[in-house]
Length: 205
Ligand code: GRF
Image 1 (tube, protein in one colour):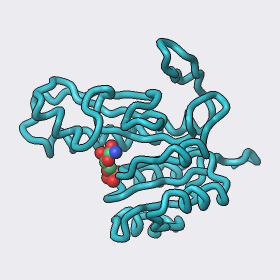
Image 2: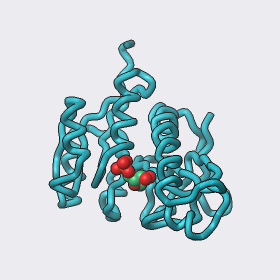
Image 3: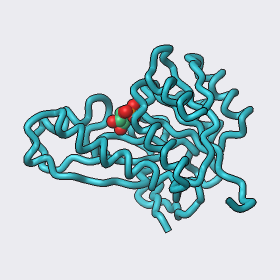
């Protein structure tokens, strides 16, 4: 490793933590050049807490958003990475991570091709709707629900899927690849940001 300072990230998650695990493995292997300084959860019994400890990463349960925000700031977190965090972040939290370029340095992964199927159970929504292609989106977080600037998307065919579980299995495998890959260029500032149609557009360099 060179002398370059690694970007410091905190992962926030409420549940199983398979995306956290994919990110932590990518960090471990050197594929994702970052340091995970903290895993935060709003749930005492979230599986992700055990997973964090197994990687030797500090895990914290904090239900109070302003205290959580203060902790992240005191740890000099550059980017907040949401991975199945089931709380909507308040305006103050988002402002605390506002980048001069306009977006907030908070990233989320959503299991659909946004703006289709925002909110909960998106793989189920896609399956029951009968779409031919489902997908995954990595985006910056803004004050809305799953509405922030889109960083990366990947679609996959669900024509042959016979259950929601099958859609979810295919989708999660894509999430686990796409999230670390996308974080790598985001965290290292390898993107352009521009405004078009009243929205911020993010383009990897
Ligand atoms: C993933 O499907 C993610 O896209 C969504 O919540 C789920 C979290 O799964 N935001 P896990 O906790 O990472 O396994």
